Image 1 (cartoon, rainbow, N blue to C red):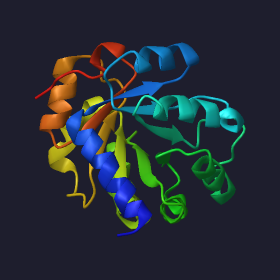
Image 2: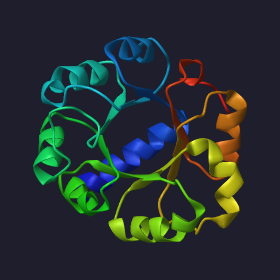
Image 3: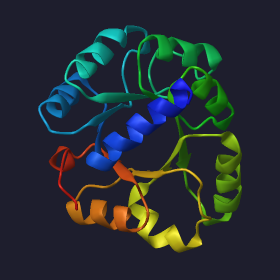
Length: 196
């Protein structure tokens, strides 16, 4: 088993234990996430050049951290950016750039391919690209639509996260019932919620 495979299993185990993940965009939302029982924190906005102390702070509380490569400041969404985040100690890297998934996995980090569905007519091409990317996990946005489109989606060979516009326990439960392994949300009332 490679380090990437072991990290993937650890990530998926943590997700199974608590399927609601905190999606944060500020230091204050990080404080709120750390005060909650959430097991995985997704950093969507931050200073990418100064992430190491934040990653350590999160790890010191026993949580996992995923960072969105395309959205953090100061780091380009390329192989060098992937290597930078891996050296900062992140557990997972999120990107909409499918061609980066192999580079993320080579760094021993969980590769999360973010898929933004904006039109039904693009769905087949989007899922074809995801199936070729080699990601460990796919994150679908907006996640709140998953119950409505699940029957239209192809079967994925990797776990699916639903993220975006999930604000209530009923929306989170509906996404999980539609096949998501977990949800990412900025709604702190859901962080660590028991949805079983």
